[in-house]
Length: 129
Image 1 (cartoon, helix red, strand yellow):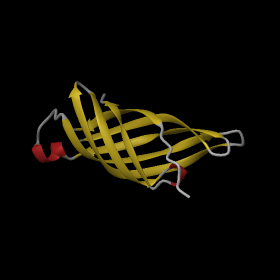
Image 2 (spheres, one colour):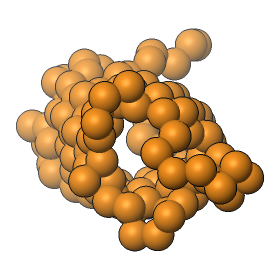
Image 3 (cartoon, one colour):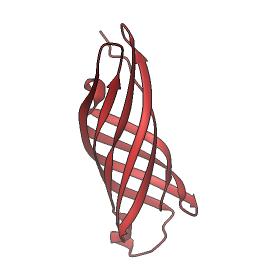
């Protein structure tokens, strides 16, 4: 039987701690239905190491290719019980920041995720503090 894809909405903020390293946090929400409605709230921390500033030695690049890692959990809520499930992953990302601090990104990570996923694709908007 084929597994049903489960998407979610997340918001995150990154903060540059070194010229090519960002740390950040995220929180989100999703709902899916199996035999009952299940809600979950993913939350956690991330670390991004930007490769292009190391290679080109240029500040304020609009494009960025980076290695990323995430460490977090999902808080599950349903009519039977509430519980946390640990998740983690490592992968790569690409971002484009056309205006000051606001941009779009795509990331692909391998690891241990909710719903028996071992890989995850993230697409969204980002804001850099």
